[in-house]
Image (cartoon, rainbow, N blue to C red; front, side, top):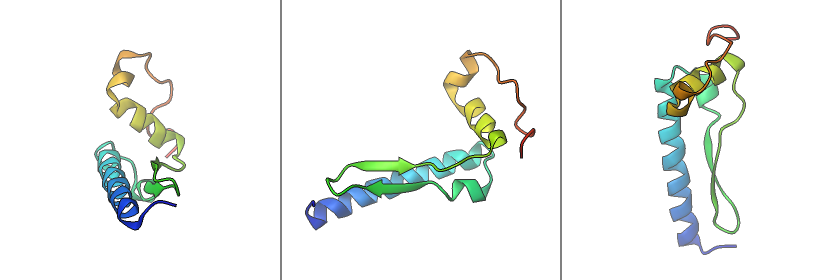
Length: 84
């Protein structure tokens, strides 16, 4: 286990980054139900992770289209609305 002050700092970082990711997902048009699954996690050793959870196919397509790298690769065959 890590000291409480280190845990609180890691927890604050996890929650902050999860909030930033939820905001980015909102801008990409991902529905609230799916954005709400994003959460910060802190392990017993103090490692910080962001759990994204499951996305519908249409939402995953929207997310890929919103990522800068997606614009330089082959376009996705599915439309963002196809599975919403």
